[in-house]
Amino acid sequence: MRAMSVFFDQEGSDRGKAATPEYLKLIKLLGHDVVLIPCSWWTKVASIKWKQLGVEVMSDPNHLRRLESGNIAVKLGHASGGLCSIDIDDDNQFEEFLELNPRLKDTLLTKGARGGNIWVYIDGEYPPSTNTGANSSWKIEWRADGNYTLISGLHPNGCNYRFLNETPPLTVSLEDINWPESSGLAQKFVDHDRDLELPNVNQGNQCNQGSQGNHNNTYKPIGSLPSEFKNELRNHLDKIHRIIPKVPKRNHDSLFNLARISVDIARRCHRNLTHKEHRQIHNIWLDLNQENLNPNQTHEDYYNEYIEAVKGVKYSETESALHVAALLAKEGKYPEGLANLPSGELTLLAGMCYNLQKINDNSGGFFLGLNDIIIHLFPQVTVMTASRRLNSLCSPHEVIERIKLGSQGSGKVSEFMWKGMPTNLENEAVPCHL
Image (cartoon, rainbow, N blue to C red; front, top):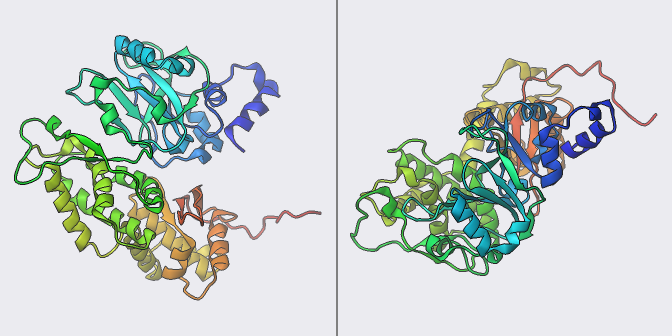
């Protein structure tokens, strides 16, 4: 049951006489596939771990209740069907941007304390989140995958978030948007194929000096890239976000983890990646990690360190976690309660899932595919048998929960979340058509 069905249930009952919760109004405005995030009152801080949230969470009654007790943000990008926002932190620049883009006056517009947000669904590909930078006179932030934007509640400055134009977001292509020439954003965005862009790194022994802002080198398009690589890179964006250091002086370990992700992408593409493709992966890391970069190192210095790590990685980011989790399960290192499952095979698979969640530091979910189960646990079984065992842990045993469905065609594996110990089902009735 999706949150929109909850909305109609409420309107058709006595509960409809009460005030409609804000999150239901937002679902009606933004569409069925939007992912809403609860935040604390008066803040922009999410009150839950949000990066792994998919649209499935919008049918969770506990999540919906959280949305009624604070500010509400919208998870942007592919998670919400391509919904993005253009955040302009200046009243005059907000008006000037709309004059450059008259059509966007008809889309959803919201406002906090200053400037405003312009909400659009993007038809086609679009770049990762970025902004004009501290050295620009413009204050524009392009918000997409890996970001959220507040839409309802109380701003830290004391005012309410409000609608300037309360209408569903328009669907536009990236080329339809006119970016101010002096903002520099147009240089960061792409040509017709809208691929991510490559920094034009200085060669030789030249080093950036001064503030961290000097890392913002001139950008140029890299042209089209193989579709399977682009799909795999898109599928791994959340993982790249998770390995960005939270404090400086952690770049070496972060680059090694980035190399493990790259190896995973390469193996899923069934080939070695080109330097052009590696630079695109590395460029995402650079964009996300601007605050932690050493001003005495160039982008090329970091890229060379990354390539050294790529050549030295033996296991991909996914494979190493699966390998370790399977070994721990085979050694019996899992909670004793899992032995209550009706077969040793289910106990072993549940133990692997438990350890995958632990390896992921209990934050977010873990990725697991049917072929992974066969390779690491049950080499003699069919894909159908592996699927039945995995589905059995989801229901009826409810040991794990599928939070994001994979795709056999694209090779993307499903994502799961550990729920807890199994319950005794022996005395429960099995439904059937009587």
